[in-house]
Length: 268
Image (cartoon, rainbow, N blue to C red; front, side, top):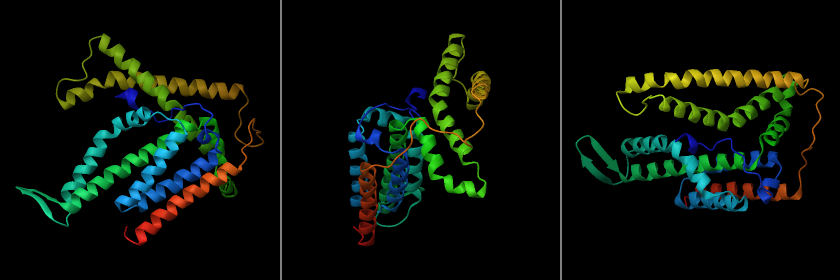
């Protein structure tokens, strides 16, 4: 299950999506999320799905990586579907047994909710799959730069978010190694009561926290040795510049949002 978590991974490439300015990708993600939450019909979700599949194909991201990233969220997705299925009223009564009442509106809402969550997760994964952590940090800092006038530590916030994303795969790999080592010593994490399973996680959490703090200390020492003092006066090896392809991509995102709004307005 841990190996299925792909958030924070970066797939290097030279595709059109990889060459986009990271600021454009962040803005497109925001537009995509807004369009996804405004979608209310099958046609609207189909339009969003076509957009997502097109971006995935252009970025040459394996669909296996996308579906693998959904596996850790499967329990949450199913739980959301069940809640909407049994607690949404309206439409035709389909099932009436004991305390369980399922309506056609509940089935429709559950389907749309599951589809929305899956599309949201996949769209977020595409950002990290096609954007390096350094580029993502620069993009966040540039987009949030107006907040510097309010004395908001924009550079430090962007750096923390980037480091957090960067170390997700590392911590997952470390957790997998600790679990394998504990199993080799006879630890059992799959049998017993819920309380026993929770207690069995202690031999995993303790060394994991120790390893995380050690890595954080080593990273802080490395940054101090390189005379890191925040973003004031820092220059960049690669300066972010918008190109014509970024404008085209952003206009396509706006067209997606406009199409969803029009479909919502006319109830299609």
